[in-house]
Length: 328
Image (cartoon, rainbow, N blue to C red):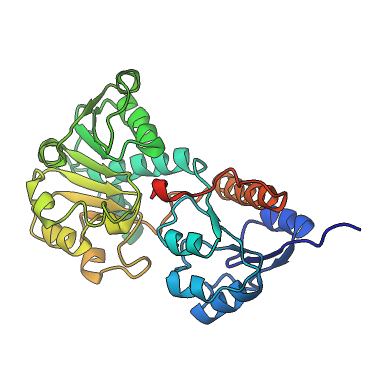
């Protein structure tokens, strides 16, 4: 007699190929709509599921984990970032946590370059002018932006995504600089033509573009704060496709409004989907709705990684993408 299927609760609608494959393998409970679960619904799900599959819109804190039922043994996160899950609390209850690393590297790096170009070349302003019907024709001084070739790009976080950004930016003729917890090996630096800065303050003061590509951890919270924003050149721009909490968003808004920095391109926000209206009103800011991983290929591959993690766990083995405390 075959073993019963694991009870798996999925908190959001996933791409159809992923849902179909999960239905074949597990006893799946999912949402009928794509609205996030309420806190009460999450508690109910965690009390009867063997596996929970949350996304970044679900805050799985210590209180929720304490209320989990005895069957819950794996939180198979749909996404690479796990700052919305209290990992120590989960491990304290004997609950494993897995994620989906590496899948969105190339897509997020593409979006980073798109934002750099959009901000420096004022693409949204041009688009708005065309859509308004007010364009009166070409003019020598209209919508002048800046050439990115030759500019200094400072990458904050030189992991998979940071290095993918460096490859693209170098092809555009940018000079690559970076700050990281650990300096890369010499051969990796040489491959990217990258210059390491041990001092983040010194790097920020000299860059034309700052790209945020580090995860959100207690040590990176507001890493780009008011003091460091004041160090930036008034012609510099900042781009963030990582986590909104890495930048002090109120300080960034003040700096942009005061003209202390030239512009910003943001795909993530400190308030998640609640955007500061003062930030939204600025003409020198490009805002996107967390589109960094929004390709069909990436979202399906994320689901495939979730399935592999659950199946490996079901077979009594360590999930290949297990999150350990030393990683956060």
